[in-house]
Image 1: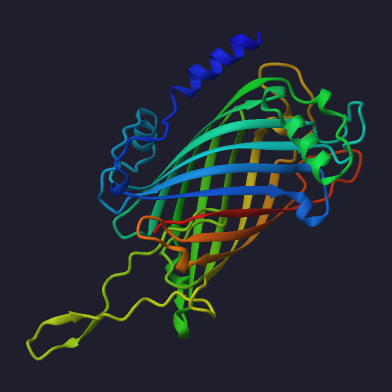
Image 2 (image 1 turned 45 degrees about the vertical axis):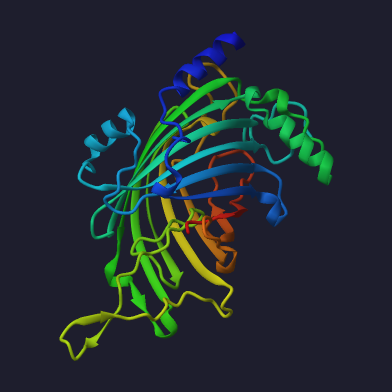
Length: 370
């Protein structure tokens, strides 16, 4: 059974577009990041309790060919009408997710609380932008392995043995091994009426979005908006938690010279935040999702397993602060950054006991685009 599971997983993984590691490094900007997401930042250890993710990204200037062909993304793009847009960003992510009930020291099943579950996943994303950089389409394909094969129990025990904490005893009750797939479409558009520039070059950019996800991992529709404050922002800034793309500003223009030609200004773009060695931004977002299915709550699709009655409406409020260190930039590598994101999530399921909302934090460290 396990050998068949591995064989099926390898077959499905081969259908997804993988990073083109042999591509010409100078053809595009590249970046990486590592994210640790945990509710221990706010003194709890329950429900969505841990996530770790590695991300590798490529940024392509408008009109530049990515050098990658994907039948999956090409078909998705033809279906949603983004064929005429340019691919501006490619992301590859691998990670592990972990879910537990509120009391992890109980060995027996807890049918009135969240099921134990873990997942290892790989996802690939393409971002398409229009020529004016006012609208984006994001297409995401994800494949995951849910169950003991994800080794979430071993990860939690290792962390608790290292940093102290209750011994997690209930992993024998987790959702069994199952493959999961997810396809997601997200559209984002700048809200020009809520975009401002204040003295000292401080900017505000607002974006509205909607997204649809279909698959055996999750199926939902969601909508919301984000507001970002900072300097030198794009018209559509990255969502909180994403790697931010530096805006390619148009050259500044000075008055007519005596020769009648307009000359470009040599003034540098101001991005500093208090200190010239620091750049910063602050982002906030709200999203509402109508959930049709969630494997981590409703249980597996192809077998019987632990489940709980999920709520159809879930709300997320997110606040993210980001610091970038421009002096860490080198001739071939972009600057380093650190970001902390706080998410407040409404209760996701119903129970005979009171289920509170959850707050968790995400710490991201990485290297952004040059």
